[in-house]
Length: 262
Ligand SMILES: Nc1ncnc2c1ncn2[C@@H]1O[C@H](COP(=O)(O)OP(=O)(O)OP(=O)(O)O)[C@@H](O)[C@H]1O
Ligand SMILES: [Mg+2]
Image (spheres, rainbow, N blue to C red):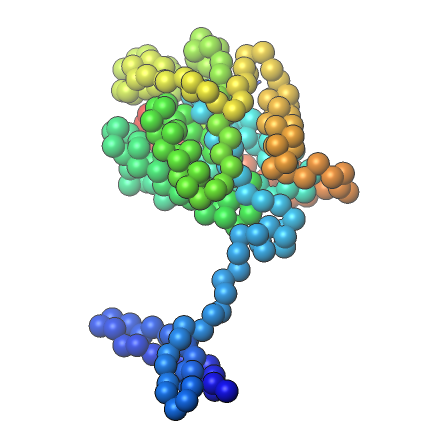
């Protein structure tokens, strides 16, 4: 009978120690080292623990088309169904992880790549992720899709459509005004292109559909595709009733930090 002895030892590398978990297997007087099979918790196991699976809802559209507004409403609707979701948006990405990136084409691509990788990791945890970035280039959105596909994570591209005139008349951050006056250069829709998604999973028209309807369309899609549970659950209180959200920074103040479109 082989004798198996689990143990840990240190490997000293130039700048740190690494703990290696191993077993010594003795058989017929011979010893060998095997890596101990301490299995990592799998995505499926986490999904069972949480009762949900990850998926990324990628919102793309002009500035002012309503990506952030719809994603906030979607988050509330998901919360009411007890689905844990998280929004990635300019305020928590462009001012944090990606604050070293400019709006050059190369940095815009890197911006989208990092957002995609973060979304992928959060989906691996089991969270439904929404991203609200203009993401004007088809090539970049396709890269985001590929990153998810390679990890077998559902990716739902949502084209948040609305005529430029409507988005410009909303101008919630005053960015169109600055772009028209030349204060901001390379602004999507004005002097930089927006490439409409050729085949998004969902198209919304926020000039015709209400905010709640738009979020509802996405929720229905997620339910019909089996990405979130259709089982009736005990209704959770809307998040806004459980906790008063901290006041959002004034749109104008936020706009100061956003020199051009993401
Ligand atoms: N049906 C609708 N859906 C979404 N937003 C709407 C709708 N009708 C009116 N709005 C208004 O349009 C504005 C959309 O602003 P929002 O910040 O959500 O746009 P955005 O696409 O996230 O822009 P940005 O790319 O600059 O962040 C909000 O003031 C919102 O209240
Ligand atoms: Mg926004």
